[in-house]
Image (cartoon, rainbow, N blue to C red; front, side, top):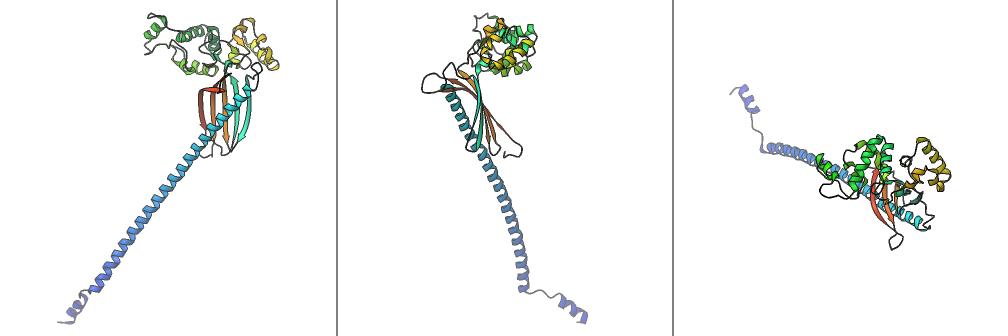
Length: 317
């Protein structure tokens, strides 16, 4: 065998078993390291997801906690409103007012007014209903028609051949008039042919809780006062100015034809607006209608409760 062949034989000599074992162990350790890194990465991801979940859950519970506190504060505001009413005699009770208080980490502002300051859909005469709709933009002849349809909605049915029921069937509306009291002002939108925009403008001045055919002109909004018969723009402006000076004479300041639709008395129902402003910028609003009792263990009953939450920029969601 020459020198070249001997060199090849030396080069091609197989590795020893010890060398193979070391190489395999090195490869195995490398695979285990990669798997461990993947597992650690997955654990970090899971930890991050869990942390986000915990934070979101804590935030959600914080908002819910504020909401529960707000309900308690609103109830306290209603109790204080009832207290103010019941500490006065029936003749001297305020028909409206504002007050505030602070409790815990929240400031509470309260505004209350007699529901008689609004036009009652269930008891108001045609003249008031028509006057309001005309004040809000309806043509006078259309306003009269709309007022008739509102009264037709609330009037008990007059037999199978009732004209109002026939009109609804002919219009293919899929429903009949209630033939009874409006349970809520929003039902006005179901009255036949009333424009939606007109209904939306009218809702802030309507109620179903007053129980009076007249309106309390001491607290009534200018739009409600303008609905009274005989009220021109000049008379309205003069009335609003004089009402501030001598509210006790408000009824005498009206035209003669309007006085039968006006009253200075409050109803037993009041609208209470409550605003709860927490120190963390969380705000809760509520509009509650309550009925006062002259006798009995309970000072009042809640007839309607509507609340909402305000979100302030930069506050905790």
